[in-house]
Image 1 (cartoon, one colour):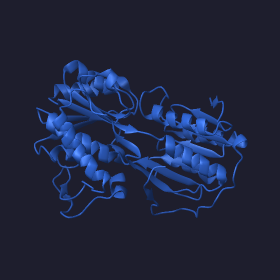
Image 2 (image 1 turned 90 degrees about the vertical axis):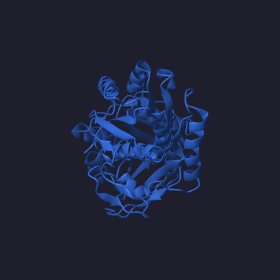
Image 3 (image 1 turned 135 degrees about the vertical axis):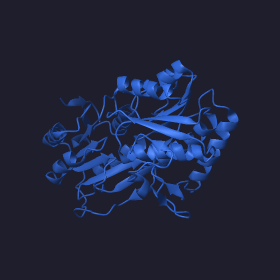
Length: 358
């Protein structure tokens, strides 16, 4: 089950409430004696999320050629995940990295293996030996939303999501708020397909949204299925994880792009040196997450207008400021109030103008 591999950070720190145990330094490890294990949510060939994490694994191997890595693809969100993480520990891994949120399935293992460093992408718990990390993708989504708001003709944007969870709310809401900052008439219709990697379901969702009048598709999928739908139907689409323009060059607008390489190398280096500590960590815009170069059919003036906001965000501006109402019209963020990254990371409600998530 375990695939052996031969051979072998961003800014933004957050320590959330509810620290369950005091962190402690783990002893250093010689590179030749080190084993780092990765648990992936989808295949490394998915063309998206896991492929980008796998690039981080490759960077670790290059930086530490005497270190060993093992990984398992398509780790299920079930008790089987716990078994896989336990097997990593049994094989001698001193560091276990889950590239998606496995909640209690990984915490149960980390609690019983205090001498092993655990990291969980999109996690929320920090303990004596478990930390989390994530990307502030909502800023790139907001920038892309500006382009969507300027390019749509029907004022209907479609969003293909996985599950109604904070990362999907944050991405969907960010697209809508970015679009409405330049076009207040825009709405977003979302469809959750209950999977991160299901090309058939993503194709069906993209088709349904297009047939309902959406002429710009966004999403948070691990593969390019709905971009192909957009290409076939002559509409536009923005993607996630990596630059996917080859699957729909006329439809492609941009992507929220991820890069875990520097972060993974820094974390493994710290674990080898005995300086690693569990924490909550955000990879920020321009430093682990960004928007991809614009597609060839994006008008230069639209690209420039969207990028003007990116420049402001890079300089410290936060566009997630009140007033913001939810889908039921209730005021959630009063005027003058700003949603910081910690609050956006926990977003569990749809903003006014978004349907299909609540």
